[in-house]
Length: 113
Length: 113
Image (cartoon, rainbow over all chains, first blue to last red; front, top):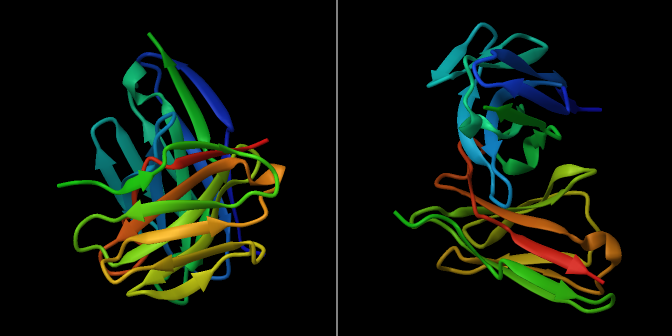
């Protein structure tokens, strides 16, 4: 069964304390992996797309990496405004339909000043 | 550029009633999909519409249905509401229908009493 698991479920950091969020996947075939950020009461907001092992993407304090079994979202020197739930989604091979997209349950990040 | 608009934002219903939710995509976006988000299950795919045709359907009972109009606006309907249908219902759109960068609305929060 295709599965996407995110860890930890929740993470509390002090401002400036760098860390990483993990998204591991067991799927029949990977077409792409996506990271989203979701603020309370809002819909998810797209962050990154990764397609192949070894690929990296960066945006401000965030860097996403991909291996054959997992992806990491590294947060460098986080600020309180980085507090949100981070979602990872895996798109299966077999077409671009959103029916082939599996979301993890997310990691809730809290950054304290 | 206007984002994805979902209405209503909040609603309360009682068991057995039905509900209709609406989603207006970003101009030019022809693919609309619907997701149910709950704390326990995370984001789960309901169905996707592209050019007025249902392209894919998730594993939900027939009480959940949807449609898309010629202007790409979409509605989803849930009949005979159950307590377990309480959730945040999110609409997501893309321009081409490829599940890459999804643009989400802010969601419709449904509470079933």
